Amino acid sequence: KVGLAPEAALAIPGLRPGAEAAFRWLYGGRSELAAEVYGALDLPVPHLLLFSRADAVIPPEHVQRFAEELRARRGPGAARLEEFQGSEHVYHYRRHPERYREVTTAFLGEVLRAPP
Image 1: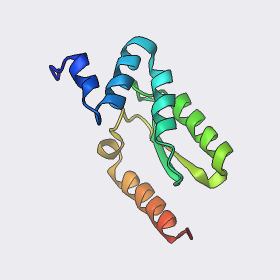
Image 2 (image 1 turned 135 degrees about the horizontal axis):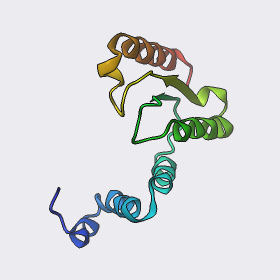
Image 3 (image 1 turned 30 degrees about the horizontal axis):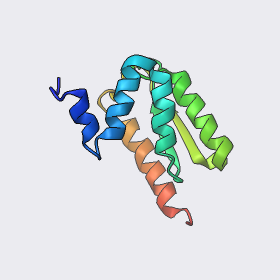
Image 4 (image 1 turned 120 degrees about the horizontal axis):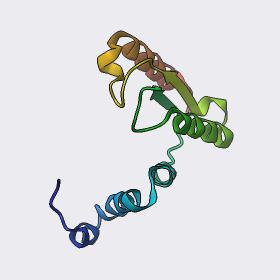
């Protein structure tokens, strides 16, 4: 628990968007928040999306839908999906360190070699 009153969080210019999003999540739902955050972070770079069906925080359907939306807007190379078996939210490296390194290293190598 941070201990920062909502009014104080909203008064801090750099913190306001995140605080507003957190409040919407608390009162409006995770799907709407995810769509808003990803929309605000619409970066024109390839995305590597790591997911697992064991993730209780972000359902795999949300990750797959996000990848489809990226590909629809920017083409097939905009998003690469990698599914990890049995790893909880942000635990892919801990559960599958060798595969995680292989996937991320290969992705970065491809992106860094690609023409701008």
